[in-house]
Structure formats: C-alpha cells, structure tokens
Image: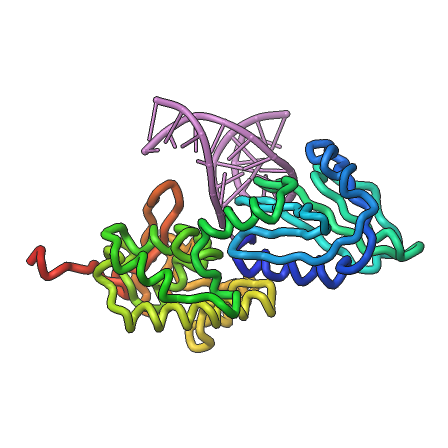
Length: 278
DNA sequence: ATGACATGATAAA
DNA sequence: TTATCCTGTCATA
C-alpha cells in the first residue's frame, strides 16, 4: 500500500513509538547490519516523510532513509507484551530500549531503500521532489508550472515524483476519473482552474488516507453496498479492468503506460482532442 | 511446488 | 523501452 499517505502515517507511528527514546537498532537479515551497529542504542529524535520517502533522524547528522518501493512494509507495533523473534527477511528492526518488558518495535521488510544518509543527502533528494499534498507548506503552483509546460500525458506527469510527490498508481487513476480527465491528455492542455480542483481534491483524499490508512475515493452515492469485499476499499477504476464503471456502467479500460497499469473509463473520461489537431 | 502479480524507481540499451 | 531489485500473497498445479 505504499503511496504518500502510508509514509506519512508511518512517520507519525514511528514518532509515537520511539521519538525521544533510545532504540536498539539491528538488521536481522544482515543487509543493513553495519549501519544498524552504528545507530544501536542511540536516541531516535524524529521521523518525517516527503512523498514516498521516509527519514528517521538519530541526531549527529545520521538519518535512515527508507523507500518502500512496490512491496516494502514497515510494521510498527506499540507496547508489545514481548518482542517476537524476527519473521522472514527483516532488514531493519527498531526496539525501544528503555521500556522494560513491554516494548514497542518496528520491522522493515522488502524496502527498495534502507540506507544511512546525512541531512545534505536528504536535502539533495528532497530538492528533486515536487510538492507533497500532505505537507502544509506544499505549493501546488510548483506542480502546475511543470504540468502546463509539458506535452506528456497527464497520467504520466501525476506519477512523476518531481512533479507531485506521493501520488501512486491508485491515487493517479482515481483522481483522473473523479475529475473526468482523459489520462492521455497533454499536461499543457489542462487549465489552471482544473488543476486547482484536482489539487484540492488530492489534498482531501490523501488526508483521508492518512486518517484511515486506506485509499477511499468512491463517493457514497457510487459505493456498491452489495459488493462483498470491503466497501472501504472500493475504487472507481483502479484494478477494475473490464468491470462496469461505477458511474456510467461502461467497461473500465486498461493499458500499460510507462511500465505501469493505467485504468480509466472511456466514457467518463472521453478522449481529449486539441483544437490544433482539428 | 510454482508462477503471477503488486499502491515503485532506477540504470542501461 | 527493457531488465532488474526488493518480499509477500494469492491462485493454480
């Protein structure tokens, strides 16, 4: 589930479990062992996220940079009765060192990135990221300046982390459907007002994702109550290829775009034709 | 047991 | 564009 909301939640969870406390740091799997040894026993100052990136600050310019990639996960367990032996490939394990018998712990698995960084390295990375809708200081105009100047399809631009940080395949597909935007439309063909609406919606959707831990994009009137699966996890088009659109009933379409599956409704999101081509 | 697939990103061709 | 990495889960055999 790692889109931006997941990382934002994770930063909060890590803060609540560890911030201000000494932490045992280890790498049961071994791939982060050297850095873990360096950090072991030190105080975890805070955790923060920007888009899909997470940093855990240990002071003295030592940060752990984490990127979950497609299937990484970071499980945070608070006040466990006991800390269980690691299951599977645990790249990084944090355990509160000052909590006696009951202790909070966190296990990282499958991450694309788990590496020691300096604050300068963090800054260099952040400089390459677009605004994160979950950050209060995010400036949607920075994204807009990129979009309005690009002939690339808006579906690709939305997934480009240097345009907007934190959108993944689900928010991308769902946002475009909610705004009836053709995924293949060049960024430059959008109008500023449309982007303002999309950004505001994105902020609300992702904030909901942070609250609930789930991506919920379907408005109540479009929810299928009869559907057996969890109504909280319904989508308009994401991973619904061939199924009827929740709004108009047309079969949801899918196509690979830049190596990722794209989903859209050909009727709700009709093909954009530029005036220049007519 | 085996294979396909996944809410990601990068480097090489 | 393609290959590659990281790990877990689910469907199929």
